[in-house]
Length: 170
Image 1 (cartoon, rainbow, N blue to C red):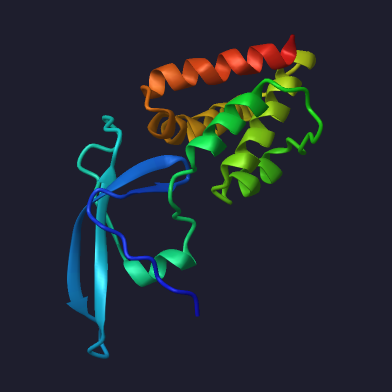
Image 2: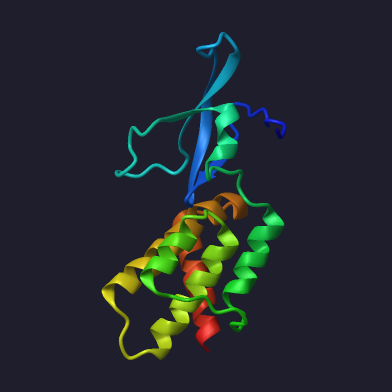
């Protein structure tokens, strides 16, 4: 079994593109009397939709989920660069494939989806509402994490993503 990382208050976590901050760690015992640490976290970027949201998970269970640490600064730079580069690895953009791929909580996969959807949007005469929704979801999955790592607002990050995609279509 792999070593469990010991998180501390203030650490950030990412789940499906949303950034969370650990605000409390509680020491408890499980049903077998073994000590466990419960991580309590809430959204880092507040919005009306997530106001009052608080989550918790046993620290030793994080490895069984899609919760992960934020990407590195170098990864963020590479992702921003990749957004505007010519497509070399287009991914299928049918709704089921996109939903499944976004469920992986992998920013590199999300970038591939976003670029493929963008190219379809600008080259196709028809771009369905469901694909438009998937495009917006893909964008939102990158915005918060990139904003955290690059240290700018989510709104500015969204603008930068869209500007990079505009270069891709040029």
